[in-house]
Structures are given as structure tokens and as C-alpha cells.
Length: 403
Ligand SMILES: *Cc1c(COP(=O)(O)O)cnc(C)c1O
Image 1 (cartoon, rainbow, N blue to C red):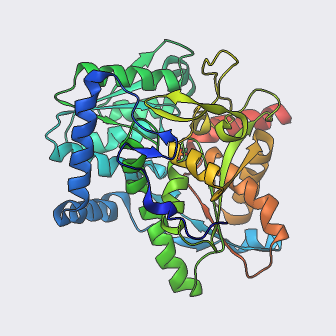
Image 2: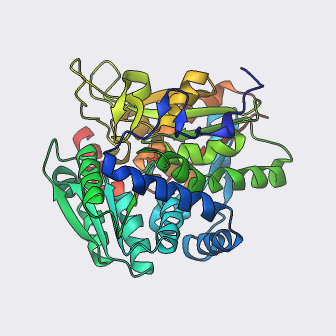
């Protein structure tokens, strides 16, 4: 491992992380993107903005989230000392709200009067509808028609909070198509609309902006681990859809070479099955949604559909900063299958009394593989990115199929 590289420095002036990232957008979007970048940079250096962000994180989201010693899971595996960073306790049940609060405060500062977003499983849509309601802004959420069928509860939640859901039937009617439609809406409503992207993807400055709003996860973890154990953790584990909860946990530790970073993609039915969502482990570099990164593509360069038991991980790309950290060897990327994730899901329920999201269960499955091989003084932190309430229908169906 190189120790002289400043991994936390982030994107260059063009929004590139090495050869990844950038802003591949229509000419008409360019002024908007530059506007947004400037507003974001200014806001981050203004004490008023940061104080307001802190206040909402504390009083609306419920931060800081606890760092919790998972004692029974640690005993079961008999190796590393396992801690959970409890993002599932946030308002709306996942880490997504950290980013949405930041972006809505930015939208307000920029004088925008309309919020749009894309959503797959609906968690980002719910977090967006939540902050839009809180700030009295009309909100339009683009969602694939297939996903609307699969995620009825989240659709109802968004509607209760006043969001309008626009079904997207193009392509396969899933997340990547919803994101295309949202980008199209943005181009046509440039003046009044703020586009909230839900993960560390999209054109610059989005990957940096979303990471910055999620980085509170790692900053808190650092302080909490110091208080609890008097030193830094030895390893951090997080699941990866687009990669925002992972970047959020990792960022504060990128320049500490003693801290091992492990990102976990969804291997679905297996990397060889063609039915997975592992963009790094099973994809190739290309351009999608305004940035260059690793993508699931067929031989003609067409984006292929991602597959995972967990709807929140089936995005056919990954944030460009992850692509770069992968290339640099700073983060280890692993992939776990649906079956492995489901097993870890049940273990967490029974051992810790915490029902994790199926996305999160992927991180827990990697913990199950690694923790038993590590010494008892190895401090491991896993990001509990969300709670599993939304996954009950899926889990019950799978249990019935098995029975
Ligand atoms: C959306 C979601 C994810 C995946 O998104 P990232 O941007 O990779 O963090 C993971 N866990 C939960 C609970 C989610 O809702």
C-alpha cells in the first residue's frame, strides 16, 4: 500500500478521479452544473449553512447515530470485535436522509422551487419526499414502472408526503431508466428545478457533493471509536449499490493506511450467472449518467440490467470515486451472493435483535467471512445502512419458497 498518496483529496477541477468521473452532459446542462458546483463550494465554507445542516442532522435525522458493540455477533464468529454504525436508526430508516437534508438546504439557498429525484427501491424517493415536505417544496419522483409494482409501500409513503410519482416505462422500467428521465426533466426545467441524486453517481459535482453530505458517518465513527477504544478501527465494511454509505463511512479514514476498507457489491445469483449487480467485480469501464465509471454492459456496450435480492443494490454502475479507489488499491472490493446475504440477514436478526435491510445484509455476509479469521483485538466497523422493514415481503416470500 502506498502511504504517500492523499486519497481523500477527491476529484480534480474537472471532476475527475483519475480517469473516472467527469461531467458528460448535454451542452444545455453545463451552466446548471457549474452553478450547482459553485453554490455547493460556497455553502460548505459558510458557518451559517453548516450550522443549519448540523441542526437538521441532530433534530430531524437523529444524529449522531450510535456506534454499537455487536457483542453476540462477535461471540458467534469468535474473532474480530464487531461494531455497528447504526444508520438504520435515522429518520426514514437509512443513511439516504443525510444526503437529502444537505441537498434540500442547498436547493433552498439557490432559490429553487421544485425538487426532482430518481428512485429504484424507493428509499431515496422516500427521503427526498420527506425533506421536500419539510421545506414545503413540490416534489416529482421518477420511478421505473417495474419498481413501482415491486415497492408499493414506499410509493404510498412518498404519496402521503405529497410527492408525485412519475412511472417510467422506457428500457426495463428500472432505476437506470428513471435516472435518464430525471436528467431529461432537469434539462427542460433548468431555471426552477433542483435534481437530488441519491448516491455518489451522476456528473460532477454530484459524486463529491453526496460523499460530502454522507461523510458525517465516518467522522462520527472516528470520534466514537476513539472514545470507546482509544484508537482507530482496523477495518471498515459497507455494502455498495452506487456507493454512498460506503464513501460516507470510508472518507474520514482514506488517509489512514492502517485502516482496511472493504466495499461489498451484490453478486446476485453468482458472478458467473450473469445475474448480479457487481459493477467492479463483473463490469467494464464506460460512460453512464454523466460520468465515466465501471458499468454492467453487454458486448455491444449496451447497459445490462443488474440483479440482486436487494432492490437498493441493483444499479448497473458504481460511483466514480470507488472506481478510482479500486484502481489505486486503497479499498478492497468483494461480492456476496443473494444466498449469503440472506443467511447473514437471519443471523443478525437472531443474534442482535436488529432486522437489517437486505442491502446491509451484504456487508454482514462479508463480516461473516472475515471476522472469524481475525484476532480478537481487531476492531471492525460495519455500516448498518438501513433497517429491514421494507424487505419483509421479500424475505417472507423467500422463506416460504424454501419451506
Ligand atoms: C440505497 C441503499 C443502499 C445502497 O446505496 P449506496 O449509495 O450504495 O449506499 C444501501 N443500503 C440501504 C439501506 C439503502 O437504502
